[in-house]
Structures are given as C-alpha cells and as structure tokens.
Length: 159
Ligand SMILES: [Zn+2]
Image 1 (cartoon, protein in one colour):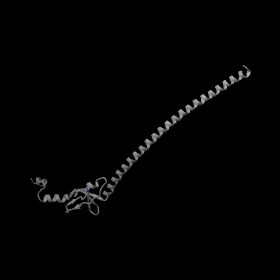
Image 2: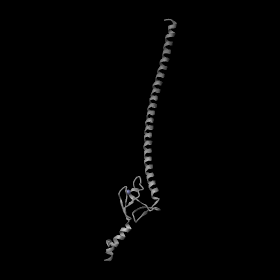
Image 3: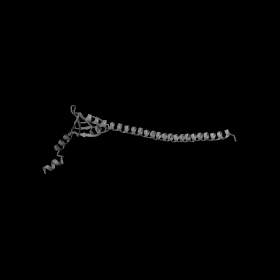
C-alpha cells in the first residue's frame, strides 16, 4: 500500500460521507417541504369549500331578503290603496273619499291587493266581479226590516 492509497481512500470515504449526509439532509428537507405543501393544499381546499358554503349561504339570504321585500312592498301597496278610502259601516267595505266608489274588502286584503270596484245591481246591493262577494247597504235593509216589522229586537221591545 503506497502513501497515495492511504490518503486517497479515507478522503474519498469522508467526501462520500459528506455527500451522503447532504443528500439525506436535503432529502429530508424535500419530504418535509412536500408534507408542508400537502398541508397547505389541504388548507386551501378547506378554505375553498368554506368560500363555496358562504357563497351558497349568501345566495340563500339574498333570496330570503328578496322574498321579504316582495311581502313588504305588497303591504305598502295595500296601505297606498287604502289611503284614498275610508271604511263605510253602511256597506261594510271601503268607500273612496271623493268618488264614493266602493271596493271589495276581500280583494284588497289579497296578496297582492286588488283595488276592485264593486258593481251595483241596485242602490242597495253590490257585488265584486272578481270574487263574487256580495255587499248590502245595511242601513237600508235595517230600516226596511223595521218598516216591515221583521226586526225581532224591535218586536220584543214592544212586548
Ligand atoms: Zn272581491
């Protein structure tokens, strides 16, 4: 064995050891980075899922808001209709403040409200062309019953 062999082989062994060590170190680092990358990817997927859920929730809430706004606007429009009317106890329905036109109580309470004018067959009998509800002039029929002696309260008062 000459001197060069004594020096070269251990030197090769040392250099080989260093290279192997560096390789192992970088290999560990790579697998650690890959694990971190996988964790980040999993987190990213989780966030993406949460964002999708939030978008779905937002859309559902927007639908609820739109539905509520629709309902509120219907109530507002009923109030806007009835502002022009006053309730007539004689007819049991709404009467226009200036024109005295009667409208149907049932139809104005519908969703959405209908401002349905009544059609009158006589001065004392009206009907809704939309829902067929009948309205009578209560005062007229009350007075008529009294005149004909048909009011039971009126008769019992005389006994
Ligand atoms: Zn009606």
